[in-house]
Structure formats: structure tokens, C-alpha cells
Length: 488
Image (cartoon, rainbow, N blue to C red; front, side, top):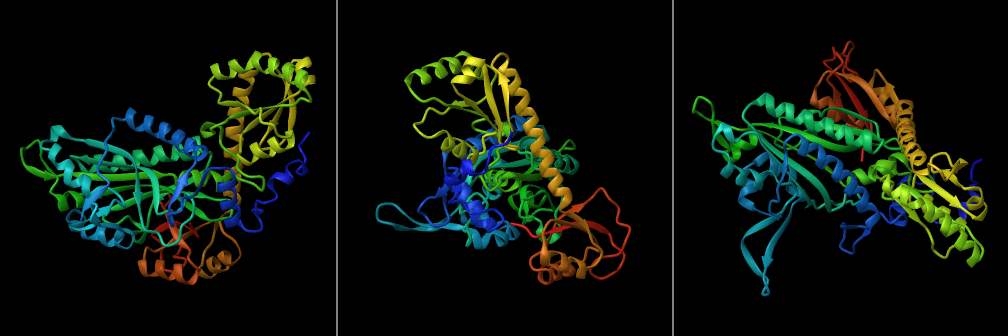
């Protein structure tokens, strides 16, 4: 049996339908589900507890991964001297339009002799500092990470996706050998893929960025790209290999095994609160969020149903007989005792995307069972209270798997192979998704595609498949297989 949409209509009537206006639907869900809101400072958001709890779950998972492989968390300054930025010209050029500067300070608002940049990313200040702690090859590798916020003065802001301040982790590592640095970049990319697919249930494409999409100052950039339910791609994380570029700018060198001075090879990598936005856009529906159980702040919500004090007492006693077992099993549950109609509670928790709901009334208490409602399918069925924690644990695992499989089916249904630029233009005129094409690697042609196809970009290069056809733009022999999409 499935719940009818009418049971939730009164509560969600103010949420724009996804099919009517995806952008408005997204903002409505983020705000009404209490994930985040605008702060009053233009372009800067406040992340509310429900949204922050999802970010904390991502933090814990990734932090465990990097600590297991020897990385350590540091804390570096928020403000960066201008001279540090200027040492790496390409990096500065890439970020110049987005940098916010502190030019005055103190009670008298006195002009600073040298402006300080509010970090858009921390390569430059970390480079200037970390050299103090690297003298010999014995000091390497130096595997650093920090959890912080950064500021980028975006002109068009969207909650979680592109705000002027956002929260992330940024890793910066330094190595004695080039191959070790490249292996590091790949290691982190695969950690990110695990976060996206195993934790957030979002299937991703991974690979290398094209030269024009490469992070400023990097030799190359690795990326993971998810497909949102409006057909647009979302870059969910990046891992950059710098070679010796930053080490050269900041003279980060060491004595190698031959007692010769040599520049370090470095990487940087980051994922951000954009991941929370990805959960909304990859899984949500017209009723609101659908949250993967692994990162759900509330995995199981219990809705008591009663008419009077006597009925409440019976239901409460029954719930208290098995609720401690859920906590002991590590299931994040909540009992909703608010003075609201059951239908309003159902809609409230559907909006918040809680995976499983247990409806518990007097008859359920008498029968020693609960009514389970699945957020993904809305199916109802009875579960016995005996062994409930174990049963719910299994249900949550199956929910996580089904959510990933649903997103994977969506990605496959919206992935295409095309042969010519005309076909690409016609495709993106009517729909989105990923489009695989053969490309010769000419950057001028890449720029032409972006212009002629209305903002379509190369999202990633497939490094595992040897191209066998002709370039989709010029018809010459292809050297690369690439995925195209319109993206956030």
C-alpha cells in the first residue's frame, strides 16, 4: 500500500514542482527543509543544523579515510599577504576576480600598509609556511589537510552550490618524487568517488579535466562529475597535481638522497558543502529531500498516533519498550511528539527526506508491531517490534542501495554517444545529460563547442578508453574520448 499525495499536499503546496522550475524547487527545498538560508550578507549563507549534520557525516567519513593513509589536519590563517599571492602569477590570475581584500582595520579604520586577501584557497600561504618544516627527504611526504571556510566573491549565488563563503576541506601535500605526487592525486580522487557513490548514493564520472578547465597553476586536474535530476552536471570534487610549479614559486625544496637540493612535487584537493546540494538535486522529488541513510541526520522517525491521554500512554509505553534498542544499534532515530496532525508530521519528515518512518498507534501497540513507510517508494507494511533494530538496519542498507541504483539508472538513461558537433548542438537544445564524443584535443575547438552549443563544456576526459573515430568538431583523427555536459 502506498500513501496518497493528498496526505501531504497541504504541507508542501508552497514548494515549486521540480518539473515546473527546477531552480526554484531547489531553493524551496533547501530553505523549507531547513538545510540553509541566506544570512543577510549578500551571497553568504547560513548552514542550519539539519544541513550541517549532513556535512558533518561527510566530514567524518572523509577524515577517517585520509587519517588512515597518514594525512594530518592543520589550521592555517584566514588572511593571506598580497605578496604571497603575487609569487604565483598563474594562480593569482585565475582567482583575481573572486578575491576579497581587507584594506582597513582597527577602531579608526586605518588603511593597512599591505592589503590582506581573505583566502579563496590556501596554496599560497601554505606554501610559504610549510617550507619551514621541510629540509630533507626524510621530512617527506608532508600530508596536510584543513577543514575551513573560504571566500570567493561570486556574482551569482546559489545556496550550497555557489555562495561567497563556503565550507570545505583542502588538502595540500608535498612529495620527494613526481610519481608519488601523481599517486596521491589519484588516491584522493578515489576517496572522493567513495564519498559520492558509497555515502551519498550519487554515481559519478571520474577523469582528467581538459587544459582550459584545469585549476590555475596545476599540471593537471582530476574531477568527479555527478548528474543532477535536471540533466545538468555538478563538479563534486577535484584533485590537482602541481608538479613542481608551486614549489618553484615558494622555493619549497629538500635535500634528496644524493644530498642535492630539489624542489618538492605537490598536490591539492578539496570537496565542499556543495556535496549537500548534490544530495538535494540528485535524489529529491516534489515532496522534498530523499537523504541517503549513511548521511541522514535522522534515519528513522517515529510518529505516535493517539486520540487522548490514555491512548498516548499506551503508545508511549510501547515505543519505550524498543526505542533503546535502536539507539544501541547505532540507528539515528527521533520520536515526533509535537502537537500536530499525523498528516502534517508525515509531510514534514518527507520534506526532510528521512529514509524510514514508523507510524505507531494503539492498535499497533496491541499487535506488537509498527507500520513502516519507505520514503523512496512510499510503501507501507507491518514490522514486528521483536527484532526491530536488526530489521531496520537491514532496511536502511537496502534503501541506500536502491537510492544509488535509481540514480545510476537515471545517469545511464541520460548518457549518450554522438558523432558530430551538429548532433551535440541539437541534443543540448532539447535536453541535458552526459554526451560522450571523440575529440582531437584542439583547445580552439573546445572554445567553439562552448559558444556554439550554449555553454556546453568538457566535463572529463576518459583516460581508460582509446579513441577509435574522428573528432566530432573537425573530423580529424581523434586522440581523446570526452564527456560533454552543461554544468552548474
